[in-house]
Length: 218
Image (cartoon, rainbow, N blue to C red; front, side, top):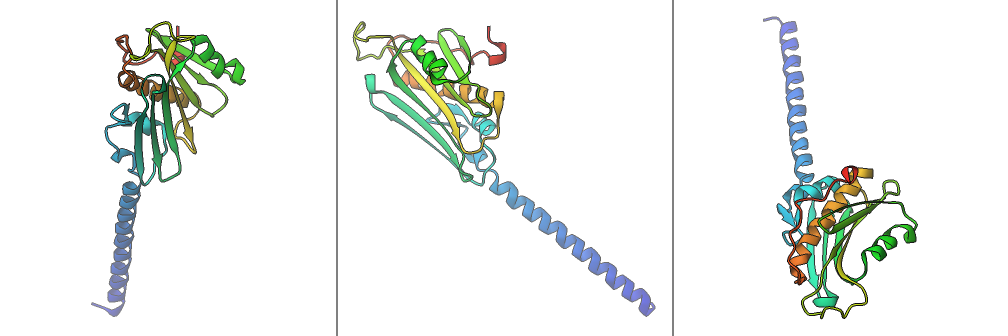
């Protein structure tokens, strides 16, 4: 074989070897990217003390290398509170809290609506009320569910007792606009379902599987 042919063959092998090296590096790098972006997928299937679907959290928060969840119940009766937070290594936080309040439905809606200077969208089903603020991509949502705590006598409240949930995002979110408002409402609703049992509300209640979508509200 001539020297020229040998040189060409040697160069070809070098090029092929370099190409293989790049391909392997790309696969490994892609593998690390995939691994480091799976933080939310490594959370339990149900987060927030088994209250909220992980898939719902993934709808709201952007991909991150790692993520952690935290939930806590504090107080009983009039001082009942249930809180949850899901945070990522990218400094995004999805949080929600459910408190027992002495508040009428109208006072609740006024607080989050006209009195707060925000435009809101509302929906309801089977006595469960929901609303979300509609100011650009800024998202927040709230749920209102009547709840008479077991250790409080009927008629002792100035208004009707209710569980009021609030949910929002700090930092970047994957969803925006209407999608974010709906997801935050679903997050607050799932927290409220769990809180209703924890608060030992007197009246048994069957919660609908989900609330009507805002665009489908009747």
